[in-house]
Image (tube, rainbow, N blue to C red; front, top):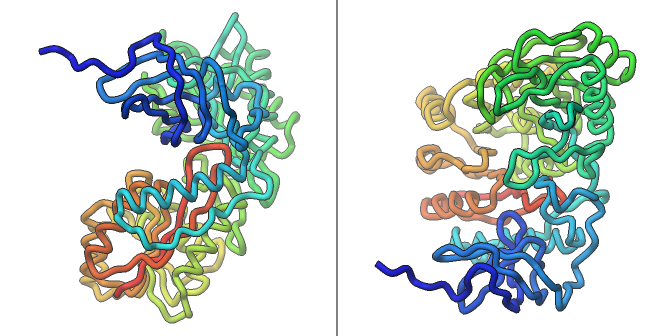
Length: 457
């Protein structure tokens, strides 16, 4: 069987106009209908492109000459932007990033959700769209017998050694790089994934936005850390803002960062932070939003869409450590939260006590199993809030919601595509999507969160 020839072949040079962006920020151009994905191309730009790879239905290229620049193009301020895979949109003005994200949400609503008439509001952006991340976790390696720490180069496990990251809070960068130097001085070796030898795999920091305190997590291959006490003393004396030093042990030959064993080496077991009026105790492995400023914006919008008067029963599916549940509990009669991870539920219950919030009840398990059980026990939710992972809601949960018929659903999403897919299922039931508010939680990247208000017809 002969292979159908593509309109372009590897090493061809073609003149193209970029029409769109891919999910990872590459420019999309078409040659006789054949898509070419080209890094750093912006919609509306014309360029001469070298074809670097072709597949049956699409190909890849790189810009040889930019013939016509977009007015939205800027020089990326980060010196390692083109090597590091952490950001995708630093070459685009922030205003254009927000416009693009709104357009992207609108497009997937029409294409996947068949929701052409749902209002998608302009994206709520940040006044200062830099240095916002309160958590950093970077791999540690060695080069020329010296420790390095940074992010992986795009589509590789080659570590880009760096001193600072422009989307990380400054304290994270300073502490990680100093810990790297202290460990090197003490002769602590980096883990090598090929030989499965060495000690230090990753360094992680969490920063409390409200208290300016830091939790440091050392992810190691072995339980024993050479010169552990000296390492702890040097970190404590160098950084008084570090209030907790934790070790996680991961002995497996794996790309997964965390192992099963986590223990406190020194200081506080939890890092405390505040969003709005709610205080949270965050453990080393807790899921906690990485952009504290925009998290408050996101949760306030979810609370606004819930339209609570103080008389409602609310279910929070995928409740995590109780972040949204506790926000809702301030305005609801009763909130029920469910989460599959037992440690997260322990954190949620602790956070409820921390805030003296008593009108919440948490359960461990799959939402699609626990929620019907609550329904059988007589729980009749007026509002259901879902904040699922990137893959979206399980269809069985959506069917459960359709059977329970709450008067309102608030859907907090980190993936517009799966949001659109799930809204389509709800709309095929007895629900109508009233409006969608995107929130830019991750400036300089392609990611966009959104909150949807869905009412029973």
